[in-house]
Length: 82
Image 1: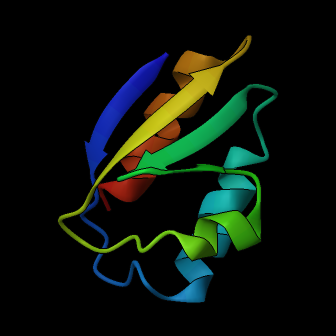
Image 2: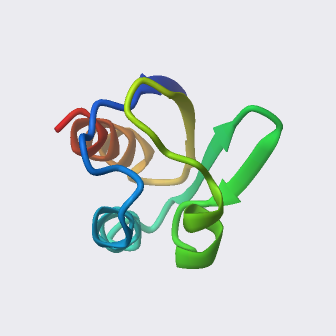
């Protein structure tokens, strides 16, 4: 399951929101990846997520696969829209 999301976080480049995003992703059993431009990283990896330049207005594709994929995508999308 995939969903394209426009990031609306005001402090998106800071480490703390990225850490919270990774913690949220780790609550799900599904495999979760974020795709941006030509880069695809594991949403459960702090180093991978910090390598993405997540800034307000950017578009990212959340790709989840597993038992709770729909819930994972919905909650991660909501987090990015804060």
